Amino acid sequence: MVGATGKLIDTYGRVHNNLRISVTDRCNLRCTYCMPEEVVFMDKHELLSFEEITRFVAIAAPLGIDKIRLTGGEPLLRRDLPRLVAMICAVPGIKDVGLTTNGILLAHQAQPLFDAGLRRINISLDTLDPDRFRQLARRDGLDKVLEGIHAAKKAGFNPVKINAVSIRGVTEHEVVPLANFARLHRLEMRFIEYMPIGADHWERDKVYFAHEILDQLEQHVGPLMPAQDYDPKAPAMDFDYVDGGGRVGIIASVSRPFCMSCNRVRLTADGKVRNCLFALDEIDLKPLLRDDAPVEEIAALVRANVWAKWEGHEINTARVVKPERTMHTIGG
Image (cartoon, rainbow, N blue to C red; front, top):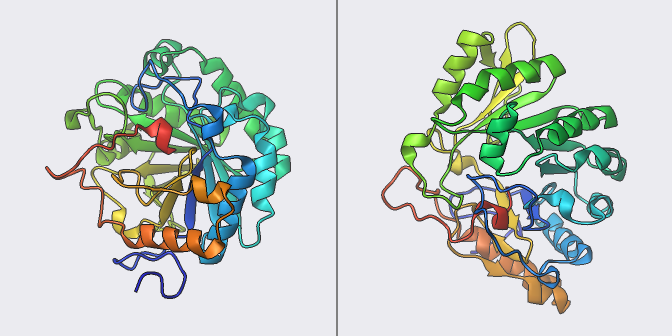
């Protein structure tokens, strides 16, 4: 029976407590692995309001959702975002609210976000080289990202996590400089294998694999050991430097899929529920949220969507189908 207990469980027994909410599809960068350079963004009226987002969270919390991550596009482009953070933090049952950002606008928003109740923050940074930054992001802004990182630390975020996408032939030489930068500034570095979710044609040969990243780190930065508090349900495999110089996470979505421990469900900026980043089907809840539909009706649809979740994304098979939506319209 679908959701007999009311919890968000699928046919493989996976229980979902992690909700990723995209608040906008707009972005001030054009990263090649995420979105096309030329793009038409949604009209503002197509986006869920803060009140509609919070209503969805209030419906999802009794179903077991207690962890929220706000994403985009670039979420800091959504005006008055700290107000939404405060609204979500006030929902009974929500224990953890985080944010993923490219950091361009973070310098002036880090403190208001922290004051609103945000406690976890991930900042995307693929390179410390300004020219390489522009090549990847198709915009300038490295100096603003670095300013945002330091502002997040000053505001009280601990740890500040840095996300870097590793692409063979493009960013494998960035691994060591980024790792050293993270050690110097007491940041938690996370390397992410290149996935088929952007606008460009995906080439598996461009995947710079987790074991190669780890080998490079151990040869040129320092010996690593598995983190003792590693969470097997988390997407990242966590390692600590033996010398106590910090932590590194590896998100090996291609070489070590974590689908069978996935606990995530997603809400897009335009109100669609997706049970997987690579889902080919989604449920449109925006009309129900806007028409004040009964809680039970919305909850039943969410439970059914999660119940129908497939075994995994099948990146490593010939059956994989790239979603029509690119990353910026789904949420990171």
